[in-house]
Length: 142
Length: 284
Image: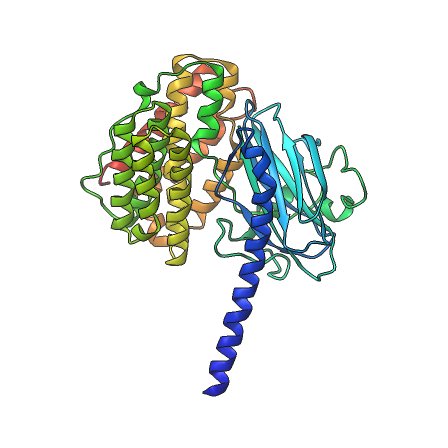
């Protein structure tokens, strides 16, 4: 019985810890968004997150509308990790107007879509001391 | 967020909207990710999304109506008062219907904001609470609806937009926590149908190619079709779900190709979405 309780508690704390790191990643993504909110960007409350090994990028399909301007903000809880987010259109052409990835915990890309439709967001942990690194991606539009 | 073929590939944060990876759509995109090195300096100018096998995140964040309506506002001055309609939810029906109605009602909230109608916003805020109560997720939206009502008194439209967006996210999250993830998808679907009905009403009234292009949303339609295909049998057999599932492929045809949504197609999309929204309100 004692073993089961100990195991359950250990599992609980492990899960809490994993949760906290993704939430931390999100908090950095939202921190990256702050200056842009002042410029009139509305930040969506829906966002993506998870953990990834280095150099194994993932793709997210996102609907974007011509006439809007978008910023995508990526965050990680690992300060020394290098992360990036890039945006491609449905034909596979790089669609971002600008990007940055030189700040600790954060990276971002801005898109002004030329057409409405599906776009591919490519997120990557470029370098990290961790085997798997938590990340989160938020976006805003105006 | 994600359930890849290997769960180790990317793990889920259950508090986030996104919850699973899927391999179905994957052909579109991601094996190139392992071969194209994003890590070395500048990103590649282009990638081949078609020829390489791939894995993509299955979940799609369904745009809020404001993302679309904002563009319409930039293109002209739509008469949102004409688009806004009273929300009737006296007889609530099944949980399936209530989930769809929740989505429709939240979308109506965004329309009320565009129309800058504080009384309608407050009424819709209360309806959101009442619908949430009907499926046991009211705790998740109490503070949201209070903020909506408070902000409506101050005519703080931006706050109301954010709170409706947050309410949508919170009810879906609460449903997921109650092991009702499938119902959560129906909230998104209901909202998208009402949003599209409103969009086509505005674009149909004053057609422009740019306005019509907003209807080109293949990723969203693919996503809803996949979700309906994988619903449990009980939900799939519901009259309203069957009807929506039957019409979605037709909508998919009408929104293609990009830049090719003619006035006739806009009218047809409007007629289909209006009919489906009507079905959601009916007891079918």
